[in-house]
Image 1 (tube, one colour):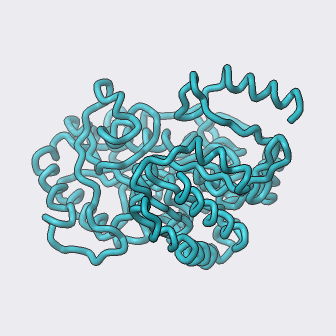
Image 2 (cartoon, one colour):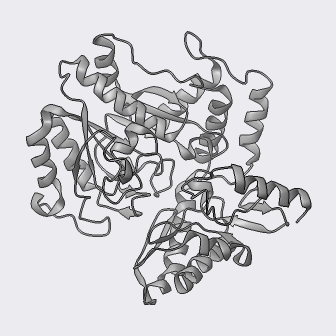
Image 3 (cartoon, helix red, strand yellow):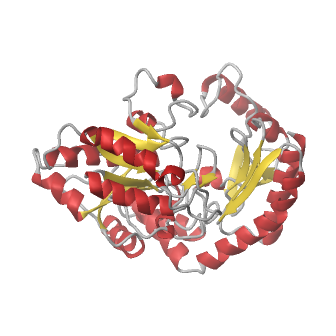
Length: 432
């Protein structure tokens, strides 16, 4: 490690605040010099497989040539222009692509900056819709426990209020309506009894509070940061029917699950219904630049447009940034131009086989795989810092949270590299 590298790390430790970090005890930090494909390369030349897809977004690998070329080409023509009263080819072309692959009823696209902001946009859209169609009292939300929807203010209010990361802010956040997470998992037979499948509790909340609920928001099928919990898609079918019955909008937060991660193009595709609003981010640009979007149907869009003031009250400075739009179109072309379903199925099958031995370990509660998501759930909290310390030796970057040792590998992960990832997960399950 050079003197400059030491100086960089020292400055970082003293002045740069990392996510979910105690600045007085920041923990170990690696200095990354470059990245390509599956690998991030550290200051000393160590190459680590990025088993996290850099927080679930880098699905085509780092510095993907097609995506970086699209950004470079766009940079030479139009890096940015405001979207108020103006448009451009990257925004239009990306919109066409999104309409090709997303649920058919979602015809209106609102570009925004990040996944958390797309949730904020969805929640504002739902409230403004209800106000416009004559229900101004409907300004709250229902959601399921153990959910996570982002770190911005309104999004935090629909994260789990007790066990989630944002329970410290309970007194300052809007009070929302929470129901138990769906009790039937994706691997179980669906139970039609509402008293046992969670829909009875949801109906009771709607019956008591429909007059103040604008929308029901949830992560479809997979709860990510809330515990990597995979629940039965028939819950979504039932939730759709209840929302329609009570005049409540349905929002799917597909920021983590979108673009093939679960084995379906969208988790929505596991069920027979479509949401009124969907939030997309993370993998939208293949992880190369921050970007997201919120999509809705004509009913919601025209409802907002027909009310007072008629305009939707949101407009980010970097809305529809041309660089991000170009990156997103390149990423989606890469995804849809390959046998992504076969690729993800292959990753899932290998993880199922190679993670299975963890079931015999004494401190393991569960092992589960869905698409390109692999989870070893422990009976105790797992230290990310202790996992970090083993990364150089393993050659794999894994960052557990809560009780979960998990991976979301890039779709370009070859079998040998995936084997190194699963071996690293097994090692952490034995040692931490």
